[in-house]
Length: 198
Image (cartoon, rainbow, N blue to C red; front, top):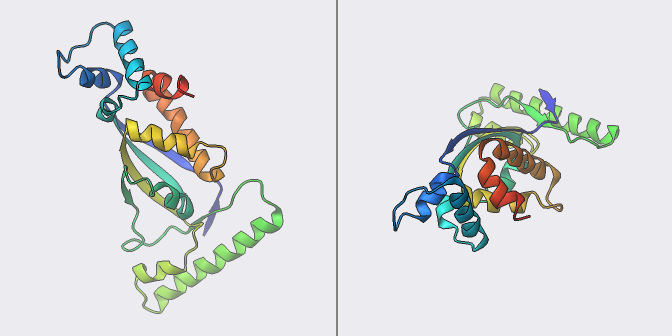
């Protein structure tokens, strides 16, 4: 059994960039890029005027390591395509989340509950219980590993919701990490669709 307090996000792949948005917007005419200044002006106008379908031409693929309760917040966004590590076919690594900033007494309680769940999980195998059934004793604090793919338009909608001040801290932390990774990989799109629109 392992206790963790980290939440991990990796931007695995990006398909397209801001020029694909511009080319898509011009598809009915020439599909050509003009010059950087004119193309960025069009990009800004598209976003400002909410002509958003061209932004769907850019897609991103992500890997996440987070407790199950965070995963449940994220998979509610049905515009994503999701796949999760299966505790039905593979034995869980038994890593449990303990939040930062809680009292020692609270952290001890979480550790105690996690240890009991880990023991029950292992004991069920000794009784001949299959993995898919044994997993039912694991708490929502159990880490899971999941992958998601989403286009840029829906990604920004997700990030606007999940970076709000009133969002559960763990989900917000993941969303903020995603914003930082996107600024590195898609700086022009993030400047127009994130920084300038906030």
